[in-house]
Length: 512
Image (cartoon, rainbow, N blue to C red):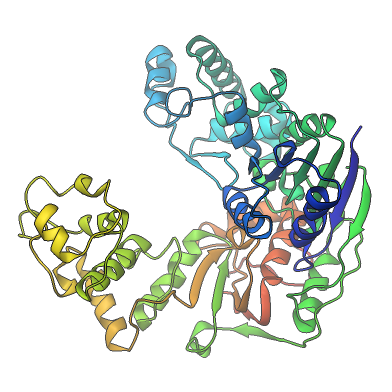
């Protein structure tokens, strides 16, 4: 049985730092554990990439082989070919053809940061949740408050047909990656396993981690039950809280100042179930501004994070910034998405005489048009650039069909985008630097921090807010944890924004 360490601590206390800089260092340098005998598992792909970079920087000679999400490890070690075996995209049409009763159902799917599918269809949402929580379809429908909306028997039949289809075609869903990994005993020979953001794992993922742990001599897990915010995907804080192991508590926050800490404590006091932890704010007062509106804030100084409950609410906020001619980044920025901004930057550098990579040049080719004389016929897909490591304007013209140079307005961009960019440039924004304003959902803010945070407390836009409120009322702890995470992103100043609807979250008060 593995010796287990539980690194626990509130936001900003350095749990990941402790995991890597102390325990991983100890394994490599003191215990002389071989790198190929160590697995480092994270909740999300971005966290895995960050961990890989950090570990490479700290231990350049170690070459850890297993740094990934749980799903990624399952796929790799089970020899699953994502291109042929993974049931995504157009492959659902084959299922529909074999099972005609499902022809009218949408199987449109996106994949979240953890590798979990996000289904548009209610039946599939229930199936996914039941798998994650290891509960029945009936209970999943109740927990998701969907039992009044759909016929549960239909959901059960869909699950049965899906299993039959996958068995007959050797196809898998993301859920199956973990199952195959465990059931076929695919765990590589390991001595040590690390787990970060442990509180976000579902019971299904915990089953996999327990399997990996059983193969190891030592296991280290870091997390904070107060920051469990993926309950809608099956994450259960009780799973982490019930894990046995010697606690290594981190107590002093390197991020949260005293004023923000006081607000956060008000939220924690509303939770009905949690592990008590000592939490000391950093030695700075900071400031909390209650009941603010956007027009009252000067965004010209410092970096800003704008947090809201939903993407729809962020879309409304983005319209406000657009009307002011202020640059911001976020999924809701339809006027200046990252692809256009990157193309502008590459085009500007090229016209200044710089060399860029072939991949960078391809971002520009997305906005060059044959009919307008931007680019020669046969080059519009940018394929000629795939093997180029370095190109300048001259080479693009001589070898890759480029016909123009000069002003960025020659690029084929939407008119409202051009007007927006022109406004920004006239106000002195070069568009070459990263934006100082980021619009992010509360769920998306996990793991991030910022000097200034604007926290919108509305549950959503009109029509959406009442629905989300009802869900919050049914499961208030989940909502408290979500706003706790949002509140604790602030390093200096927290602006609690004035609500614009009848349904909103109030810090320090129960959801009633």
